[in-house]
Amino acid sequence: MELANIDSSNRRRNFWLAGGVATLTVIGALLFYATGIFTTHNRHAEVAARGATVMPFDLEKTVHVFEKLDDGGLQKVVVKDPSNKEQISLIQAHLKEESERFRRGDFSDPAKIHGQDMPGLTELKSDAGNIEVVYTPLPDGAQIRYTTKDPALVMAIHHWFDAQLSDHGRHASGHYHQP
Image (cartoon, rainbow, N blue to C red; front, side):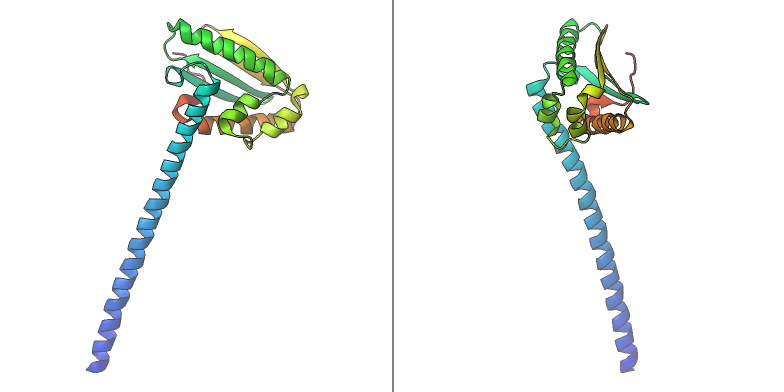
């Protein structure tokens, strides 16, 4: 009789122990997931705040577009409301100035916004002479086209675009959608 009681007691203890471990695992997974969301949200807020010190246009009224291409990439900033001439003017002036800096290998503005360790940045700065950088005004904003024959630089541009897409969150897109 005592052996049956011990065996039954062990089963109950193991049942509760397994339930406790399962509960802790679920709680841990939820905390890990929530921390990732908060970290991402905080990163987007930090990037937006730093971006406001570098970019003169309003992130809420515009969309960044980063389209990876076989020979480089196309970066656009466009307004959400095509009648917003003030934002269009600010976008055009900023991207024109940035394109001139990028041609010289000066990527200090993206570094101020996204950090010095931004993916692709080192390669772009050190080998800017092998990247054609062309600015074009658009009716709803402006664009910069990056072209290179060097596959390593194409990859650097793609990594750089991926980092910006990630950091800008809802203010960015991987494809251009005409309003």
